[in-house]
Image (cartoon, one colour):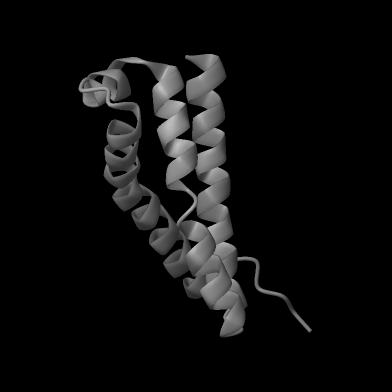
Length: 100
């Protein structure tokens, strides 16, 4: 049996994962604003790499919903795509946190 290393389903899962992370960033920033009471959260998010890395890492949590949903429906390639998006997010967080 030949295994596909990349397919259209992987790409769709990757796009879903990246869009979920992108949509979750403002939600996470809003939650941090309410819990911290810091009115300058957008300023901190723009200029401080530690806050950027924190928000990006928290924004990948909603991908767990998609991953679990795709596993329950046995759509393995879509789940792999979501995992790839999470890995890309992890790499970006490490670059922001330690290289910048």
